[in-house]
Image (tube, rainbow, N blue to C red; front, side):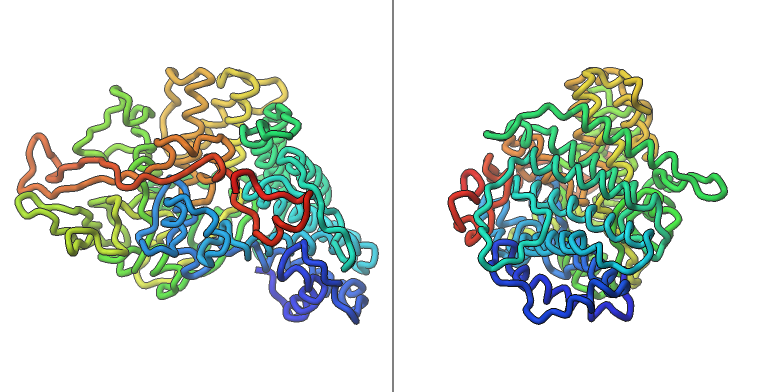
Length: 599
């Protein structure tokens, strides 16, 4: 994290400069009176600290916010649901379709008013940093770095705004005058995204290809190109392309070329010894990747995670911290309190390793009564299931025992005929953000953008624009299939099944690949929205595995358990939920700045 002797001064100065922004960009208060401008913008250290507000103060702290929210960021999608079940838990609110309450519920960092406010604050900080750069007295190289950061974060935060709340006015200078007309018309989603793409290009022209470990959280040129790849993918997708009143541009080719540009740039960066600086973190020898892939998300092996994380954040989560015991670590054998309970439909997305086929394919090799054997290795990294091992503790997850009824187990406690709050209702817990050392703090890396995403961005866009996943355009490094297989091969998955080498089937498999590779990394909700498939039952309802411990093993039940998938909860999801509701006061500011459709 960027921290130094001037940090407190920088925050104080920043808050003076953006006094209106502790509400939002629509506030009409004048910026601080009596500000000593030279103290900030004519001192190189203070200027850098001012810009570094953007790094120190993200829109929210993924997995570091204590109990805000309870569970994982995927819990308001169809990937999972929190094991905390009272009415103020975001996953419970979202499952009931009450997205209006997500604006004011403090636990919902994805959509709440404070997140909206913080994003606009950061946009204003970026604009202020750009506007005053002529006063910066430092070196030309450090000036370029500061400009690169400001342009990068302006693009990043407009992307975050747009995928949450839709197209927005695109400000290139801070709104400072108390009498300014604040009733600005909103741009379309595509227009907003395309303005952010321009900022990505500018940022890439200023930023370095790579940063040292102590600057891990600072953006790079490769990160800016990767962000451009994501933004164009979103701009090309159905939600943006088919927006009423929008330009309706077909941007799939632009998205594919941008992803290829980012991949080319990443694969070309070498250190002084000719070693590649970027690449996917190796899986490792262990089936669950705990001696390799694990280091992408946890531990302190920066020589590994900095290869793949193109923009991210790191922190240490203490063993007894709320972020660990109330959000990640389940009760029972692992002695936590709440956790994330994966949907059976997410579990079903992990294919069979030996065939590469989905489990509903009759040729896959899947056994319904031995469901956890032979799966995609990412299953063992991401999911805690009955019989799995974590921190040398074997998970015991079942609801019933043959002849005894609902008696529960160590990791699925039953009382009063139902699952005790805090224990899983689905038969699973999330594992991705669990450590592997008992009673130890967890060093953690959260990736906003990683290289695996760029490969899958390209695979998706290339399939859409060229229509055949095996076609390689002469301008690009990969075919859609080739890019997909880079990610699959890292996870020790075999060759992609030839039966899916057509545009429609490949589209489904790419979407499944994103769900598997990025589960619990805050992609799923936004993917459902941009594809406009969140209203389908298979993409909203929560299913569980009902597990019965049998009196003895048998040919029918070789593991000694009976497994029965069944519906747990029908979630409410309508088309209007493809965007969150805008903060009410801001939506009523005037005739131009309008609330989102349906709210």
